[in-house]
Structures are given as structure tokens and as C-alpha cells.
Image (spheres, helix red, strand yellow):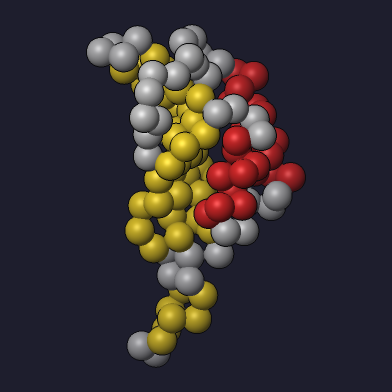
Length: 104
């Protein structure tokens, strides 16, 4: 799956943008960022290129339903993920839940 394809699938769940929105958004919404590469290599050659992507869900409260929607979408598309602990961003008044995936 490519980054634009992932963004399209995420946007079907909640408003989604790369990095940030240009105007304030009402939660829940998603921002995603590429976070470098996670390549498989040996003998000085890259055999499989991978892109690390962080998917950040922002919500007013701990939103188990929204998190499950993202998990289900990733699972249905056979994209393994790691989920970081949810944090509260006090200055913004929102919770942030981050999923980390590698796109190949």
C-alpha cells in the first residue's frame, strides 16, 4: 500500500491530513507523518523498501470506538501496527493515540 492509498482509507474514517490541518478541526481527526525508512537489506543491497508511518488520532476523550476503526482498517488491509499509549495534550485539550506502521 502506498502513502496516498493509506491516506484515502484513513480519510474514509475521519478527516485526515498529512502533518497538520491548516485550520482548527473538531475531533476526532487524523494526522499522519512519514518517519523515515525501515528497509530490509543485506550484502550492501536494499531488497525491500519500507516507509515508517505514524498515524495520530486526536479525540476529545479516550475514544475506543475510533481506535478500533483504525485497527480494523489496518487489519483488513493486512498492515501490521504498533499502538503507543494514549497521551493527553493539555495545551490543545485533546487525547492523542498513535499507531505506527511500515508500508512496503
